[in-house]
Structures are given as C-alpha cells and as structure tokens.
Length: 372
Image (tube, rainbow, N blue to C red; front, side, top):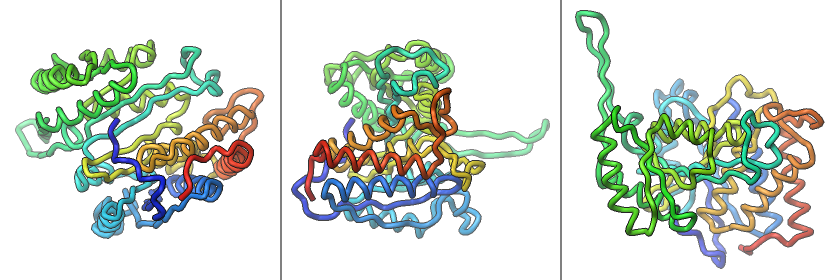
C-alpha cells in the first residue's frame, strides 16, 4: 500500500484531523473514536488538532440538496491543504462517491481480517490463524461513477447507465496493489468478469500483467463470482486483492462475515497528493441510532489505521488494536457479537472499556513510539 508519506515523528506541529460525524448511528461512533484518539494522544504525549465539520449524507441533502455540500467540501479542502486527513462517520446518499470524485481519492484500501477472540461468533469455520487480506479497490471509475439516463419507450421506462475504465487509472490502482503485495507475500489477485464485461476485463488483465512483473509480484485474474465463493470458503488463498469499484464493494462487505460482523469493517480512501478519508465500511444504521447498541469497533479501528498509515504511528495504532482485543478477550461483547458466557456492553461502555485498556497499556508497557 502506498498511502501519503507518514508525518515526521520529530515534527512538533499538531497532527490535523477533520471530523465529519455522519448521520444515524455515525455521530455516536465517531464521538467514541475521537475519545479513543484523545486518550492515545494524552497517554503518548502526541499533539492532535481535531476540527469538526458539518452535515453529510442524506441529512445534508435534506437541508442543502447535496450530500456533500460546498461548505463541507470547503472544510475538507482546508484540512487537506494543511496536511490533515478526514475521519468520517457513516453517511448515505452520494456522499462517498462525490467525496472521492471531488478530491480525486482514486483508490480505497479495506483490510479484511478475522479475530481469534471472535472465532466462535463467526458463522464460518475459519482457519486457526487470523485472516489478514488487503483489498485495494478503484474509487473513480466504473459502475458507481457512471452516468444514468432515462427515457420512455414503447414498453414503458427505459434506463441506461454508461461508465468508463481508463487505462492510466487502472494501471495506477494496480501499482498500489503490487506495491503492497511486494511487501507481503508477492501474490496479487485481480478481480474481473471476462464473459460479462469482456473489454473491461481485458483492460484490467493487460495492465495487471504489464505492471506486476516489474514489482516481482505473481498475478492471477479471478472472476468476481468465484472470488466471492473463495473468499468465504478458502480465505487463506488470498493475500492482496485489486478490484474495480463495484466488485471491491461486494468483496469488502463479504469481509464483514470473516470478521464476524459488518460493524468491524473499515478502510480509507487516498489521493495521489496525500488527501485521505478514514471511515467505516458499514452503513449509518439509523435503526440503531441513540439506542446505545451500535458497535463502535470499526470506527475505532479506522482511527488506528489513520495513525499507522498517515501519521506513521505504528505503536500507537497497535495500542488501539490490542485494547480492542483485550476487551473482547475479557468477555465483553456488543449485541451483534454476543455469545454464551459473555457480557453485553453498550456502545458507550465498549468505548470506555477500550480507553481504559489503552491507559493501562500505556502506563505499564511504555507502548508509545513518538513524542510530539
């Protein structure tokens, strides 16, 4: 993976994070994630400057007619221009697609993981060792960024949807995946559908077989339907996956099954010039809003990813991840992960348990790697 270069650990300037709380259960989860960030910051002597942005998604559309308003876009532009990143809560409508297009966030990275503490919660029989797959997906092309049109024909409404795949951009996305694969197991799977979209498939295949040998990476082309089957049946057969946007979206949601809950999915979208948006991979869960039952783990894990990938704070990211593992290991579960012998924790209580584990680890293990 090649996200923006990490900030220097010797840089005394505050690390800038712009926050978009989202809608539905999003604001509750983002609030807890910000508490975790604040706890890590204070425990490890780090400096973070957190700024709050406005409404996004369907809530913003109701008020401004746009899921990404000009006001919020301006806020994000200022954050990016000052070397910061965005931490976003879940939001509906066209928000994520408009955000990606507006700021040229051309690829997204979704870690697909399983967790030993949750093996008995998962409906699948998983390998004994944790699953660790990296999914790199296209953000700016294909089905989700196409153009729709509607007309009335002899048999009623007729709808068309057209989209493109650009060779230069396809090659750039494959380079991201190949860079990651070179640092891991040197194997890359590219997802397509030769019989269904032959021209698109051939473009991705040609770019993959051109790019990957230069990185010393073995490449294979896999049909999306078989890839979905294999991801659940034999996840260990994958290491790094590269996919067009719709196919990547499908596979990232299937990754929620491997993790034991969709609430544990997360990722980040990146531009070539350092802009980054960290978020969960699940929806806003309006039905769980203000019920203290939503699982904040995915949003917290997106903070850990932000610390590691943008700010170069690997030890602090591991501190967060290990705190979540400790909470699960101590028998605490949100309602989506409940199993016999465990104790239910509400949204806020789960967050408090994670921050307590971080404080304990920071004090006893001197786990922090940076002073800033």
